[in-house]
Picture (cartoon, rainbow, N blue to C red):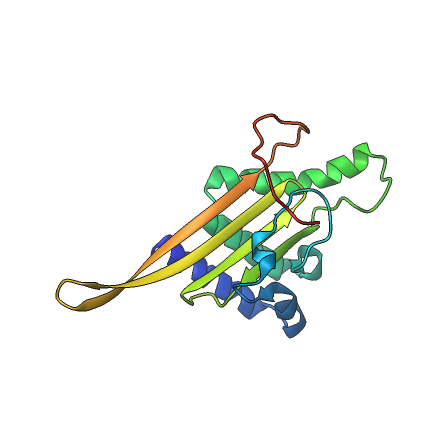
Length: 172
């Protein structure tokens, strides 16, 4: 199975596990401007928060991430998520802005359509995926779909001021 097909299957499985309210939080039109905004600092985002989910639904989100990310990037992502609890401790539990479930998933368009995508974001994690299907005629008049998955995955180092960081546009 190709990555685009695996990603579609994992996303549909996740959506099937959600209730109506959660699905409403997660789904956006593909051409929504929100799809083009991204940032990696701790803040509330649009989309479905992990803290809204039960154990099996959270596991479905992790499986979705494991589908799109190579093992080292997936390991780094879940480690960064867990480190929010360590940061909270180091800040003497000064507030509630750090939590391992303060990550949001947004799905843009309908998985399996010609164009759709997803975004998973939180503190120091920003994973964006766009899937596009292009149809073309091959010799012999057989139609086939060529799926391309474009991924922009950014896992920022936890050290502030990293000079290797790209310039980022975001919205707050």
